[in-house]
Length: 148
Image 1 (spheres, rainbow, N blue to C red):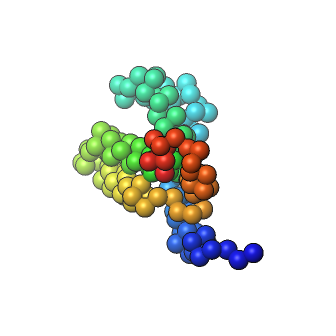
Image 2: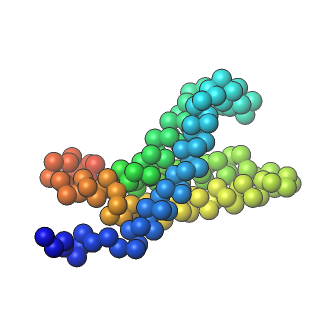
């Protein structure tokens, strides 16, 4: 059976997969690290003036949206959430430019946000759960289809 031209694997699809995996890695690692030391995480957040629910939401966002981007499931939504998270992190926690490392962290967060916005605009590519679901599009609620 010959596959259609639209379903052939292209180099761009492999690059999108690699990019998604690399972008999601930092969030999955950090979310897992925060989750496995929950008491320490809550204490650190408290020192920053943030509550335990904010710490839990941060963990959920990093792991949930990180998995979304990695798997390509609602990846535009996951990428947008992580981009906004990175912008907020840069603006709220990395603006003390008199400290030697802060400009680097600020720029890193902006760069990751930029990559996530590009992913949100381009979509996950053909190697994704989103693409598998598109093949069964009629069974998906219109709101979810819009996020794919």
